[in-house]
Image 1 (cartoon, rainbow, N blue to C red):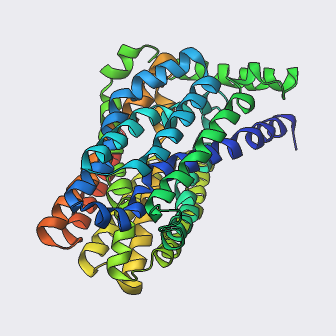
Image 2 (image 1 turned 120 degrees about the vertical axis):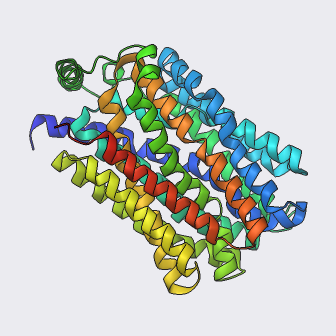
Length: 425
């Protein structure tokens, strides 16, 4: 094994497991409301529209504070700012056990979005401070498998809490769920202050030669970007770029699938398979487990071949096929579980390969702002998707219309990829 490979492996083993753990907690605190709904909706008398609006309002707070948060990360450094984000969201997530009506539900979900704003794009930007583009898709995919694995772990855990801790010490299961799944974020946030460094130059666990190598490779990439005509180094460049806006639309379609479906999956499984929360938790392991393996394989193949266009577009088309199948054939029994798994794999493979595109197009301040802007605009789908599906469920009393809508969004994303990356003759 040569010196460069050893150095990047050392950096990866130091950074990725910890960031992975952080993102598991982040995603779990964001989406555990889907399991809490199984009890909370009945206890508090929420309609599907109220639940969908509350689940999605997280992303309104997220939208308004995403870009400022990512710019503050650049100013204060990743170590301090990521710790601040995690501690704040952990406290608010635990406080959701105090929800007693729809206004407190909406308020705490909005505040949770504010608190978490900047975390994901901040980590994506943070990885650009360590890895050049030839490693980046794989690193992002490894990091983002936390989405899938948080559901593999969080589904059974949430189901168990709902089933076996309900009315323990006078608290309902959904209240214990928010409390027990929020506190670890506070603890890991405090640990961030000791574990992360703001970049290779500050890493005390690297020797001088290893630091020089990592810094040199990043400098070489910046020089290569300039040679290729990538000069987006200012905030204005990021917001004026038509490619950035197309990437926003593309990401919006992907996120519609992720959250429009993810927030409702426990309910879909309850309607189609079983009323037992712990069994619902076990069922969620299958699609998310398959997605975790698939997204790493897709990202690694994309990095090895250097091909992004077809990896991303075909992943979006796979999500389209899965959602369309759920709408056409229903989400019950083995056929439904098959199409649910196909949709989940397609969405997660899309996410795994997507972030290699904007990080290759932008640099400097434009990278921090552009990544945050794409993420914040795209994540508005996290509000639109759950709310739209809740409204459609109230109107039609089925999930079919919602599935067809998610299929169209995935198809639109695939077409945007093909249009913006076509070769000019």
